[in-house]
Image (tube, rainbow, N blue to C red; front, side, top):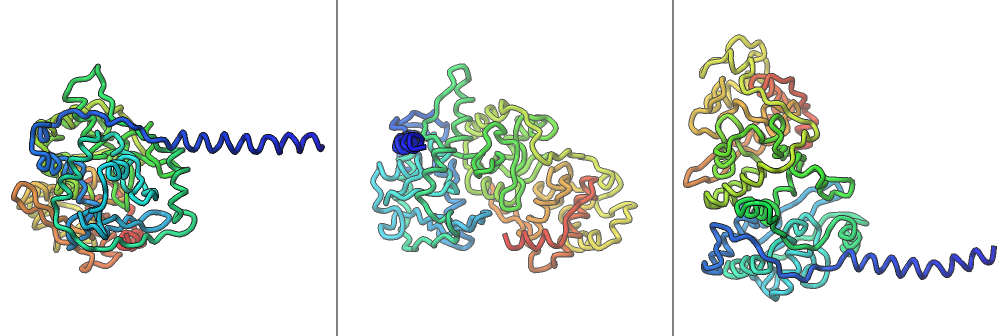
Length: 436
């Protein structure tokens, strides 16, 4: 027994040393500056600040660092997670509450390794897990642009998360398990356009952060890259090359149209976080860069994803209806149909082509074919407001107009009429979405 305890006592320091070594090794930072494909909209020869502005838009920085009605890049946006609420930080050049005192090295470390100026770790709600692939030159171009913005003295809001998740040092263990500091590596066997698209989607636009399922540790399940996930109640759809459940059946033109305008005829209309991405980011990409992104998307391995949606672009309700009348649909006389007639039909029309703008089209989009009605509920509550190519795209929010039971009835009717599915939205689920 004594010999056994002696072995244990000898082994413990060894295990501690091995554990510490593994922790340090797994948290090591890649010292490489990295190189990046040259984006059509941000050539190396361009003005550094203009180049940084284009890269910041490609990375969609403002979407997370502004609140409704707030000052751009001043932070404060809430990220409601299962373990609490995290608030984005002020990234204006204010020296006291923003990033004004960050050196180049400190800024690069924060963006690519998730470690801020004071040495404390950032939470991966800030997507350093994707930005780690960015080249040093691109990160510093973004910094140069951010430092030209107005200084906003706005203190960062304290996160509202409980123990143990409020212990930033513990993020080191999460990083050891789920994060690897690394730079983008081009694939020599692929075209220049493919590599440019891969860099845009991964290092900059961080598409996977929303569209990839999460594992038990809330890290991306990269074996199911872009197979779809639900984020704050919104379904970020499967955008793999699967022809039924992803975007494999979309044409190149439809994909480019959707990314650039938030709408593809007969395929989809952006709402919620995707509408914000189009509003703040994708519409500003050059046609060549959008084309490169499409080239890369075409090669993402097909996955069915969880809770797959099969789209019926010509559902019975659509076939039976005209622009002005719902056709012989008994459900049109129930609460949901009556609400649609009073608040929605004048813009969307009963057969779904949309009236004032193509974005109002409901025929053939995944949201109305999803029995859960997740995105339909979100849009009813929140509405849509974005400006695309000098055109305002607007739908009013009905959160203050309809109660939970009415929103549920309306959403279920839309799913029934335009998707031919039985909607499963309940008033309780609507109440939960209001809270989000």
